[in-house]
Image (cartoon, rainbow, N blue to C red; front, side, top):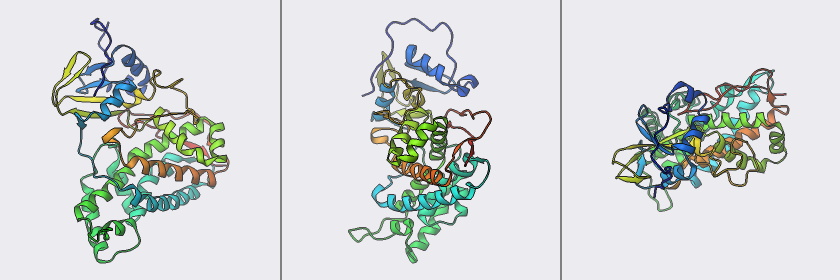
Length: 363
């Protein structure tokens, strides 16, 4: 049930609140998030056309509330146990190739040369698709990083001929596995195979690339913690979760009310749009001590970057796997990985937020 955290009393704000879409908020949303959490935990953003939830407890409650449906139709579920071994092998190979290709340079932009390519390229390799399809998938996924969004409409056209060929001539790639018989002897339909493969490609798209860029930026900003991960790779999953808490790839997750929902003295009507401010929730001081600090030893990051409850994105585990393989490859290929001299890149965007450049010295 969506909890109420609206403040007591009915004193209007001294001035109209800026919209999430205003340039100042997009540039630096955290002062606005603080104001929302402290004084306006439930407020309507007219320009966005949505009610805003900013506190961790309320955002999480909304994400698990069955009366709030995803704003867009999501892909079918990814069968983690089936795809993870193939994706791990593909991610390890792809990350190794990408990291070694640039390791000898004096300076490298890890966004342009690594994080923007690794997720889509690893998914394409796991499915046994041609390498050139990685560029097409990456472009289709650009600008649509929300974990609940559906796959690009052209993905079906890309995948259907490959599905037909795997039916006739199966190989050892993941797409052949999906096309093959299940334990009961029956095969999945073409539509199901296409949906599963499309979900995998979407999960390996822009959201993971943005999250990986923020992950690398957080570690480069904290070289002592980066050194710890080099010495103790088992800490990487926790470091990844902490980065998703502090810097999620999408700060806003949209939900639509499927029924009237009472919240804080207000009833949201059926069809009302609710904006779950994941970027604000991850920095809520009522949930996290010193929330602006990046700490790979934080005991319970409890991020909401990939949703929660029934809407939890199944690609979250695949994104974590890709990030782990990517960081391991970079640490192996670049023994002196550090920021290049010059100003640090500031994250950009709000619906999709991450640094657009990561200029580093590999050695």
